[in-house]
Image (tube, rainbow, N blue to C red; front, side):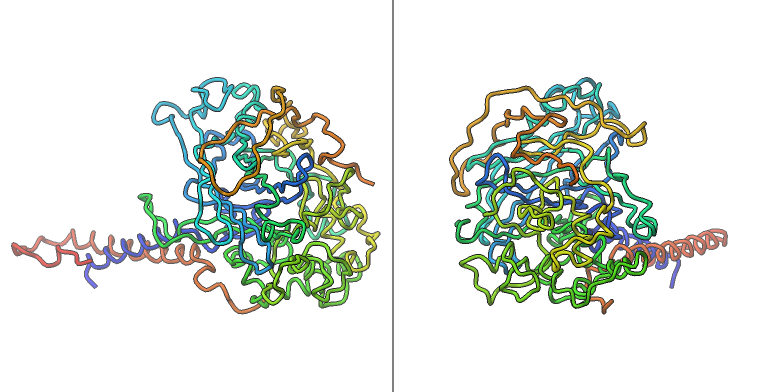
Length: 579
């Protein structure tokens, strides 16, 4: 190998490593950096998904999906924009084949006026979304597809509620939230922007399940942090099978993030879109899926879940009950855990032959479903016909409240305590396990939720490491007369930014009506991933190998430079590189 050949080989390998390193990786999904690759790409990390019947609009479904965990309020100067090279989606399956029958997708665009003039996100107080002092802002396009039809644009140029810089920069953030909440033709409501992280739990579960003696509980790990939220509210008929929520009330929901398969440093991309994040039920990828499958799970569509034996095994023979038995001497239920199969893979139904004798939230319960096409898959399933609970119970179905998790998920559902109880058999016995009655001792969010769409609390503005980590006082949006929603319509109509939703009289900290979602006081296998397993790791190794070749080439080149110069022909083939 000549000196120049070595140098060109090194450059080629380095470039190849760079291209793959810029690519999407295997994937990552839900719940706060739970998978290895997602931790390096927070903008595409799904943290949580919520699906519930709207308390103030009982014929409408509300879907809330969050991304980018652990947003510290003071994390400037760039703060936390949505990724413009990603596509964010929420998908709904109403016939149980584990394929989306309704897909809503968001694409974001930047408007950056800072240039070389300033490092500031804003150069003065921001009182509205079109305030000239707001130097960085985002808008988005919302598209939808039903029953496999081509996507249609539902709204474009819709403003995103910005990251909350602080009280001096955004003295009335509630107004910005209201201006970013829009009503579209067909009665849809939409919102995208920063919000308080609504998930509440003590994450010290990873320290030998709360310290090995339940001493490490009672601390809301996510208190004071923000997330990026996408919320949408649509009529039942837009998501129910055949548009009939009375005959077919059950839907399954999951959310994904997609990126171009190959992205190059110059901004170009090719290869089509690839799924890089996925989330349905909470905590599945965190504590059910083993580390070696986490990235593969995030790159896998639900229709393939039942074809991954190692994934199914982690549901039928989960790790957490075994750990609870070893650490706390709480007997692990007998396997296979078909009760967990109902909760996570089929929905709760007597038609699947499982041990839970109820018909609650499986698509098999829909009158027009073809049972032969039903495919077990991990989805967050919801029965739209269950009426809104006047007094929500934080333990959901286990607490006798059929509208709560695992029948969908409301913001106030204590999913950590619910899942711990389910994992030790409470769902099949109908009785709570007393030894885990107190759970993680975090029973509600640190911020009050709103009583109306988009429900999530305003983002925190005080540093997490300040005294107590409490949020700054939240400014209430200006009161206004309630708006009247347009009549429901088909997936048609002019695509604009929608109308601002000024009916936002309830802010975080303000009391909500009785029928709202206020926080309640406490009463191993072979690699099936193929190409999608660990391309970032491969790229790192290739890049390191290229660096070694480059170093060798440069060393040889410098030694050659020290030799006496030799006469060169007019045309030297070594000076031409054939690609």
